Amino acid sequence: MRRMHSLPARISEWARMAGDWLREAYPWQIALLVVVALVLLPLMPAVLLLAVAAALVLFARAWVREFTTLMRLGDDAFPGHNDKLIWATLLIVLPPIGVWLFGTYREAHWPEAKPKGPAVDPVDY
Image 1 (cartoon, rainbow, N blue to C red):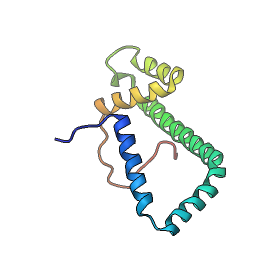
Image 2 (cartoon, rainbow, N blue to C red; image 1 turned 45 degrees about the vertical axis):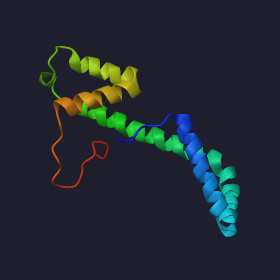
Image 3 (tube, rainbow, N blue to C red; image 1 turned 90 degrees about the horizontal axis):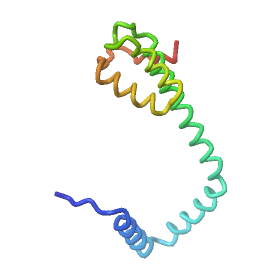
Image 4 (cartoon, rainbow, N blue to C red; image 1 turned 135 degrees about the horizontal axis):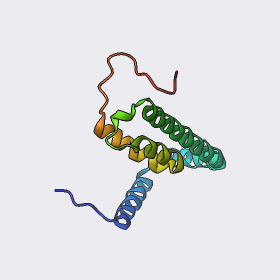
């Protein structure tokens, strides 16, 4: 069985591997690495901004998916009297936690069947 290393041990192993690669690399590989770094470093704020925007869009899609799934369910789908209201409040007040909790609850209680046709997303009405 393989033993898990601690993070400092992994970092030192990666640094050792990078050092080994640099010693064995051809000069054109190192020059290419330097050119790519010089081109990408000034673009890092834009790349970071795009990554944050993509994460927000993906989260918004997940939230809309979970909320529409909740609203499409009838009150009789839940065991308690106010469960649907509680889930809706949780999704609205604490969105990241609500999306994660309702998603796991939904998967446990109503596992989705494998779609036979093209995938239908509730966001794409």
